[in-house]
Picture (spheres, rainbow, N blue to C red):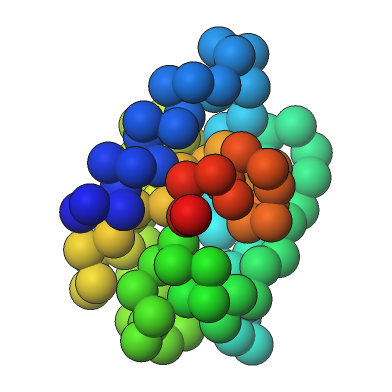
Length: 106
């Protein structure tokens, strides 16, 4: 959970509009990708392997471990109970290569 604490600390530094504006309304795992629909109309696909490479999720995570997922906090997080990990909507919205997240993973 140390990564989650770092992510939440960085999120608190974002302006309130960016921190809470985008929410996840639907998500699925398909062909090794996490595909999410956001409430602003975007559909975002991120390779599970990229989430692992960027240390957003555990390095050894497999797509099939993410198939069971729950949307929490009114769409602010995806919770993956099999691996007990949380993925915030703002990382999906801004992308794993955004300057906001790169600071956290340093």
